[in-house]
Amino acid sequence: MRFLDAWAGTIEALEIRKGQEPCPACDHARYEFLEGAAGTGSTKICGRSAVQVNPGRVAAADFQALSARLSAFGEVTFNSYMLRFQAGDKEIVLFPDGRAIIKGTADEAAARAMYARFIGA
Image (cartoon, rainbow, N blue to C red; front, top):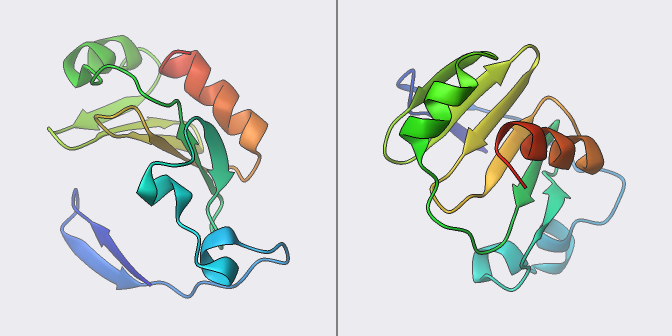
């Protein structure tokens, strides 16, 4: 897998190890989130300590307002494509459609709680 860090302008190769649980995408070629069939929910990202949280259909995220609010809790950077919020050892990368990658945990409940706390329900 290649990891492109648009903020730092770097590209690195990552070794991804398969988890013990069956992965819908890796093992069964099912891509519900890409196809928009999954709706709301969360899912662990295979081989990473991260969870994708998908709140379902929401209004476009207002990165400017969120940045102002979140800056009291941690470091925030954003552009028109994503907002990155670093709070301790956890990071939220939020996309305009409301989806987020919560890095630093593989616990879906903890990721959803962090999303609710900092982004909203």
